[in-house]
Length: 66
Image (cartoon, rainbow, N blue to C red; front, side, top):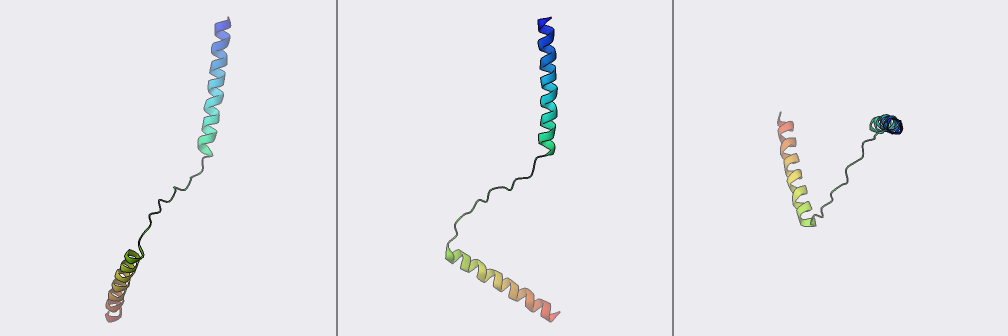
């Protein structure tokens, strides 16, 4: 009889645990991923900005011609 009681208690606890895990799963909120910031040299930033401005000017010229 003692073994049967322990099995029943284990099943009850397992059932409670399953219900709690379902609640946790349903109530989970998305967490933002940490940013992986990498330092850039100012020279690279300047070159990138220059490329973007050149591309913008090209596209703007094509738009105005159309």
